[in-house]
Every structure is written in structure tokens, then in C-alpha cells.
Image 1 (tube, rainbow, N blue to C red):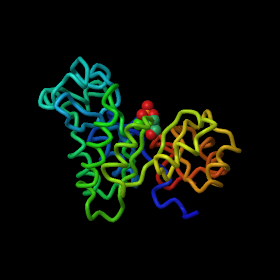
Image 2: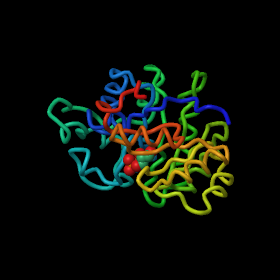
Image 3: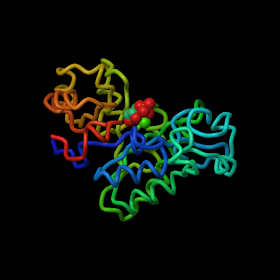
Length: 246
Ligand code: G3P
Ligand code: CA
């Protein structure tokens, strides 16, 4: 099995706890701290613009309200996506995936792009995210790793841009995990570390797949997971688990 070719420590939702999630400011914070890789979430707005967003509604992370799939991107641009976090980030916008991807390429940040479809938009989101990722990273030295909890989104990404690597996200590793990996032609399995057993970590590697764990915020736990063979951890605590963590 080839060694994991990406950063071992990945900043969650951009800047973890140090910046508003899924914003350009978060990506910049990760870069400033020396991180080589970031994770963020991609969803479609009402007019099918791929944007960075975790929740299916605007309330928690913006000054607006309503469903993401009912709000046009032009209207999201009128909202503040930083003030909920702290006054330092007032004026931060909901970024399009296009802007965020361009910034990653410009900063040399590797990206683990989580395709996070609003309910009912699985295939559409997978296709749009994959096609745009292909354009944004065309000619870049390292391609992004697309991931999703939703098999339909991964299947659509595979069909649209089969050359982009894919990771299957699952909270808990199910008994039939390997057939899902094969079906979607995934290179990595991403799971909640709290549900992982050491024998499962071994089985993932033995089958030839990379293993990524989220959201690991305790350095002692990160160490255990690396001992078990995890290839990378995704963290919110950029201050505790830095890019050079060993
Ligand atoms: O990539 C794994 C992790 O980000 C999944 O959880 O809820 O933060 O998207 P969530
Ligand atoms: Ca995510």
C-alpha cells in the first residue's frame, strides 16, 4: 500500500476553533499556522452554486435565516458569516466553492472537500462539486480528496470526474464497509474516532485503504490513533494539534 500522500493533520472546516467555520478567513488561519491541509463542506444554494456550508439552514453560522436550498447565492452574499463567531470576523462572507478552491490552490493548501448535500440534492451536489473541483485544481500539483457520507453523492462525483480521488465518510464502520468502498472506488475511509476499534483500523489498512479520523481534539488520542495506523486526523484544535504534530 502506498503511503498517505497528503498532510497527516487536517484543519477541520477551515480554521477549526480559531475562525468561523467554512470561511476564507478560516483557510487563511490554517495557512498562517503552517497547516498543509484543510477540510471543508460544500453544499448547493437554491441556484445550484456550490458554496461552503455545513448546516442545511443559515441560522447558526450567518446573520440570515432560512434553508440553504431555498436561498440564492446572491442573497447569501448580503449576510455576515463571521459575526456569530467573534467581532474580529465581522464582514466575512459565505464563500463560493470556486473562491475557496482558488484560495487553496493559491496558498498551496491541500483540500479534503466534503460534499454535504442538502436532503434530496445528493447526486446534483456530487456532480457539481466534482466538476468544479476538476476545473479549480486543473494542473495543480496535488488534487483534492472528495468525500461524502452520502453514497449517491460519491457515485455522482465518480461519474462526473472519475480521476479525482474519493473518500467514504461514515460515523461508524459498518460490517459491509468494504463493498461500499469497492462500489464507489474509494481510496480512503473516514470515520468518527470515537466509534473506531483498533482491529477495524487494521482491517482498513489490510484491505489497502487509507484511514482518516475526525474530529480529534486531544493530542493523546491523536497519538493512539496514529499508533493504530490512522493516516490522518481532522482537528478543530489547531492550537493543540499542529501541522508538525508527532
Ligand atoms: O470530514 C469529517 C467531518 O467533517 C464530518 O463531520 O459534521 O464536521 O461535517 P462534520
Ligand atoms: Ca465536514
